[in-house]
Length: 428
Ligand code: SF4
Image (cartoon, rainbow, N blue to C red; front, side, top):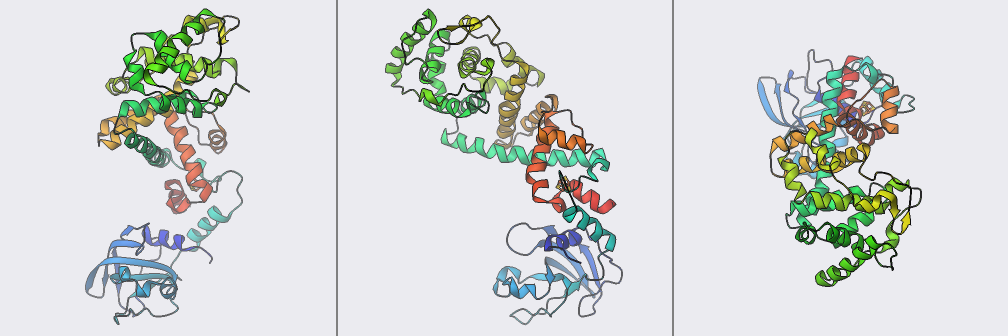
C-alpha cells in the first residue's frame, strides 16, 4: 500500500480499521473510546482522545505516523508538546518508542487492519485519471443532504475569508462601517475592469464629504466625476460645464486631488458598461441613499434589497450620452438586473455576513445566506463543469460554494477533508 500520512489520519479519525481484538505492541488489550479532535496546528495530531489500555482508561493526545521511527525523524523526541501522547498510531511498527524520560509509549500498528476496498477507493479517488475534479466519477451519486451540508460549510468558509478583508478595511477606517461599505461598493461598481480606479476614487473622496451635499445631486455628480478626473478638460455641453464649475469650487473647499484619469478603461467594454455610465449610476445611488449601509441593515426582507438599486435614476443627460460631449442614440442607462445581482452578491451579502460575524449577531449572517439563496446562480466554467458531473445548481449560494470547493479543495485534492470525499470513501 502507498499513501501519505493524511490517509492514516483519516482512517484513525473515523476509526475505519478492523477494531476486533485490538492490542498495543506490548500485547495489552486496547479499546478506543474516542479518537480525539483532529489538530491542524503544531503539536500532536489528535487532542483529547480517550483509550482503555488493559484496565486503565487514558485521556490525552494521539500521534499518527506511517512508521514508528518517524517519531525520531520528525524531532518529537526533544519536543515537550509530545510528552503526554497516550498512543502512537502507525502503519508500520519498525522500532519501539521510548521517551527521554524512559516512558514507553504504547503503539497501535494498523498494517493489517485497513480494509483493502477502502484503500482502493482512496487510491482511485486521489490518483485516478481525472479531467475536471478527482471525484468526478462519483460526485453525481452523492445524496443531496450530504452535498448541501458540505456546500453550506464551504460557503461559510468562503465568506469568513472574504470578510477578513472587510474587517481589515474597517480597522483602517477606524470602525466606520458606512465608509468601509462605500469603498467596497464603489470598487464593485467598477466590476472587474474598473474596480481599481473606482476604489481609488472612493478613497480620495470620503463618504462624509458626499453626505454634506446629499440634497444637491449636481454637486454629488460634480464631486464624483471631478475626483475621477473626467472634468479636467474644457467641455462643450452645458451639463459637464456646470459640473466642472461646481467641482472647481468644491475641490478648493475640500482640497481634493483627483485620481489619474488614464486609469479608467473603456476598451473592450460595451458602451452600457463605460465607466462614465457606471459613475453616473453610482452618483445616482449616492444621491438616493444617504447612509446606505444603515439602510441595508434595516431591510429585513432580502427581496427588498434589490429595490435599493432598481429605483435609482441617472441624470437625464446620460439618456443620450455614454461620454461627455458625444451624443448617442437614446437608451436607458439605469442598472440592469444582472449588474444589480452582482452588486448584491459581492457587496451586500458580504457586508451582512461580515457585520454579523464581527458583532456576533447571527441574524445578519442568516440574512446574508438568505440573500445568496434568493439570488440566481452565476454562469461560469466551474458551475458548468459541475453541471456536467450531475451537480446542478440554482442559486448564488450554491454557485459561490462550488467556487470555493473547486478552488480550495478539489484543486489541492483535499478529498479527505471534504464532506463529499468522506461520503464517497465510506460508501464505496
Ligand atoms: S475535494 Fe471533495 S468535491 Fe473535490 S474532488 Fe475531492 S471529494 Fe470531490
